[in-house]
Image 1 (tube, chains in turn yellow, orange):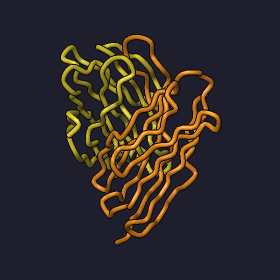
Image 2 (tube, chains in turn yellow, purple):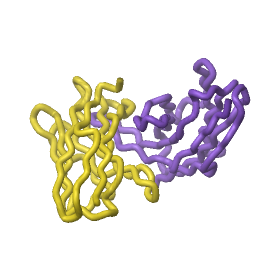
Image 3 (tube, chains in turn orange, cyan):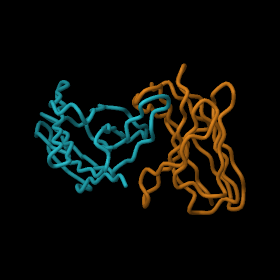
Length: 112
Length: 118
């Protein structure tokens, strides 16, 4: 068990809808990362937060947004969903100073 | 720009065979970190190892060993006497070194699917 909790495990929704994925980092970790894993794109970095502030941005669509709250949990919001957004979304957290990233079990999103 | 290449898409071996997974990376940084992660069929990503670019010593952990060669920008992973439970997708990853505060994001390779047949 990595200590990173992601909910829900599975999500099935229709095109055009909006969903929110939630992540609780390991105790004490200030950084949260979001990754998207799809068959054609592999593991793509979306966004990183550090202690509530956006730290780095990757290939995140404008329809997607994220935030990290004062209690350090994070949410990834996906809106105007398209079929191509179907993927496994991972959250990871890390401590300071080049610590390894520890990943949650992911949320599998299916857009129909 | 940073890049990680795992040229082997799929490897199939028979139990007890040794297998090496290749990883080649590109970076302009002189210091960086390299990682290996395992993704079993259940889907989670499991951290295996982190290696600092300053340290080219090979590392062994049980049946796992890692060979880091800066001269060829490679960080290969060998499983000795493979077992069915080793069947998974293995990812190599690279990150910049951060000299304070937050750890930097990882750049992943495309992964190698290892199938160990009984």
